[in-house]
Image 1 (cartoon, rainbow, N blue to C red):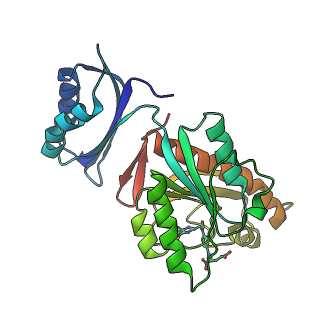
Image 2: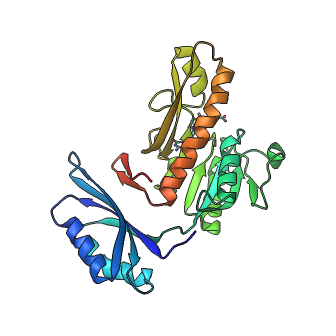
Image 3: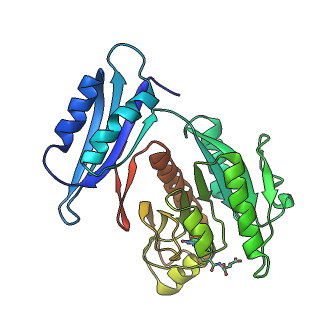
Length: 287
Ligand SMILES: Nc1nc2c(c(=O)[nH]1)N[C@@H](CN(C=O)c1ccc(C(=O)N[C@@H](CCC(=O)O)C(=O)O)cc1)CN2
């Protein structure tokens, strides 16, 4: 639900006076700080901050506030964003054969748990594979792909992202490797759920690798997509204990629950402006 509060998210080279400058700016803009989280990375010498604030008296004009904050941001060489708290983000979902994460995201959006509006569902498999899913009128696009048609298929994916105004693309078990061009086009706005506890068991069949290795924990990893397969900045991970009794099929079954909750958490953190990039890593301010 949209509120009259706003979220300022920023990252910049670390130096004295950043918090004072931000607080001073908000005070003089007639705003009060509701919540603030910060982190100083001593290795990268970078500072990260997330501030939730509201207009002390009247309505806050976000556009006017952004314009007023520009000089402060420039003074500290900040990367920053200012958004209205609770504002829904538009999300385009890509899926292949396995639909458990897709169904989970549709449900969490439908009940209002995730502040997202799903703009479209895109799959390299036909609609007949999802007859059991209540899309509730969500647009579905079947974009088959082969080695030969991949460039055109990916151009159509990017067209749909632009046409629907998607703020975020979620690879909800989409089992095609995005090209360097598409990964770059979706940089910092594309989240993938990998069905292992990275960096372990990269690739398309991690559960079989895990069973073969005889591990005692399995997991899932949500990360931003980059051109380096399974190497993007990690947003969220979780694990579950398993044993010698677990067949590969059992691992796939147990893995579905982990994938669902990890992806939903990562999407929530991203769309509520809780994730900041820190080189090839992330800073995630918890809720
Ligand atoms: N550029 C990127 N694209 C994708 C990433 C990524 O990190 N960067 N993650 C994958 C998801 N994934 C693991 O999480 C994954 C998907 C597919 C494969 C793979 O080898 N696919 C084969 C085809 C397999 C099939 O058709 O079933 C291939 O593309 O040749 C590995 C890992 C999503 N895309």
